[in-house]
Length: 220
Image (cartoon, rainbow, N blue to C red):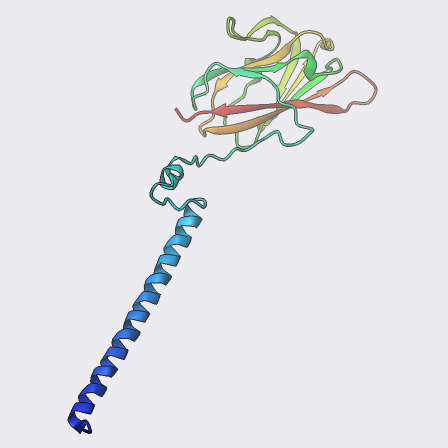
């Protein structure tokens, strides 16, 4: 028996609704899959490749990952790290700077010693508070100190960015020597690289690089 027209219309309408509902479900499923994909991508990118899935330990690993970045100042083969000691590393505090030159840090006698200071080291350096000394390097049981003052003429450049030391007689290569200076630490905390250059006795007045003191000033 032929299906009445009203009934065929109802079936057709229901079929259309079903198809529309099915398409809607497909679109929703596709959207959910896309969103899940974006979330996974974000998790991978932000967590260093760890998804943090249950039982995988990924979340704990991501939370425990250190964000520190190691920065090497001495990545140049010509860089020579020199020993130093500060009695106070807090900014704006009074401190004694012991800038040490051990026998292994120099190959010739020193006729003239120059110390270059960074432009951003905003502390007042006075020649009258600087000494050239024979030093005793400190350790676990003793403190770094000036054992004997070496007679020398000391000059500080007008802008305070260079110290020039002229010993009365050339300083020999044996023994530990150094510069002791007293000042108030700069306002800004951070790292400051002081460079040491020495001129050896001879006909050619050329200063050679000895090394660098990498000074750390703390905020508090």
